Length: 449
View (tube, helix red, strand yellow):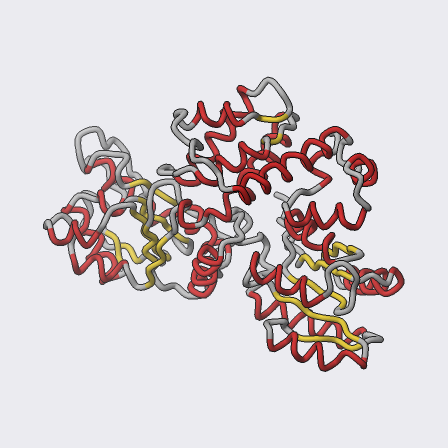
C-alpha cells in the first residue's frame, strides 16, 4: 500500500520586487514548502481564494494595495491566517504598528535565510498547521470565523483521548469533524470506525456495537466481533447517539466505566481501548428531561462539546463551497460550468435547512440540468422551489450586482484574459485587477478547460 505523503504548508509570498520574490520562493521551496509567488496585494487576494495559504509573507510598501491594506483584507476574510511583513530599515516603525494591528511579525531587508525560516516555523506552529500524514481539515472549505473557532477546538482536543460530543443540525458536517479529529490524533494510522445508531433495530445495533457469540440470539450461527473490538486503538463515532435504546445506553455506560465490553451471550469481559466520539442532531437535554436519555451517560460522553454551526450562520462560506463543489464536479466529469452572478447571490441569500449537504445536492442538480456553461438564476430558483430571491435590492446592491455581472461577462468573453478584458472595459489593467479583487472574481475560473 502506498504511504500517504505529508501535506506541505502553503505559503503565499507577495512582493513587487521580482528578484526578492524569486529568492524567497527558492528558499522556501528548498525547505519543502508549497509556495505561490505574486507581484502585488490585489493578486494576493485573488490567489488566497484559490491557494488557501497557511501563511502569508508580504512586502510592506507596494503600489495598488500595500502590506497594511492586504493585512486588513486578510484579517477580515480569514481571521486565523498569519501574516509576516517584509520591511526596509526606514519603515520599521510602520512594521511595528502593523504587528500591533495583528501581523504575526516582520522581517527586515535584506532577509537572512535562517531568520526567515525561523519566523515561518513559529508562525505555522501558532497557526495550528499540522504536517500529519494527511491534511486533517482538508474536508472543510471555510472562511468563517465561527467555523474556524470550531476547527481550532477540534484540533486542540485531537491530541487527547477526551470523549467528544458533536451536536448540530443534519447536514452540518458532524461526521466530517469527527473524522478530522481522528486524522489529527495519535490514532490516525488506524482506520476510523462509525455507526449510525438510528439506522437499525435494537438487537442488530447491540450486536454491531458489542459483538455476539454463537447462539446469542436466533440466527446467530457464528461469532461476531463488534465495533468496540474492530476499533481497538482507533476512534469510534456513535452517530445519532440520541436514538440509542435505553437498554443499550446502560450497557454503554458500563463499558465507559469499566473500559470493558461483554459480547452478547458471553460472560467474559474484554478490555477495550477506543477513543469515543458521539454526535446527534437531537436536543439531548430535552431527551433527558423526557426520560429518553440517561443523564449520567450524557456527562460521560460530553467531556468536550462542539456545536457545528448551520450554513445560515456561516453564509460567508456559501460562495467558496459552491466553487469547491463545481471544481469537484469538473474533476469527476470534465463538465466545467459556473454560476451567473445573480445565481450566486441567490444561493448566498437563501435559507438552507439541509445545510451543506443540501447546498451540494443543489449544485449537482444545477450542473446536470444546465444546458449552458453559465448556470442561470432561474435554474437555482427552480431547485429552491421558486420562492426565493424576490426581494427588491437597494440601489447600492443593484449596482454591485450589475458590476459583478458585467465583469463576469467580459471575463467569459475573453476566456479569462485580463489584458483583453481591461481593454474591452476601457480600464487600465491595474484598475481592472482592483475591480476583480473587490468582487472576488478569479480570471483562471473563466479560462477554457
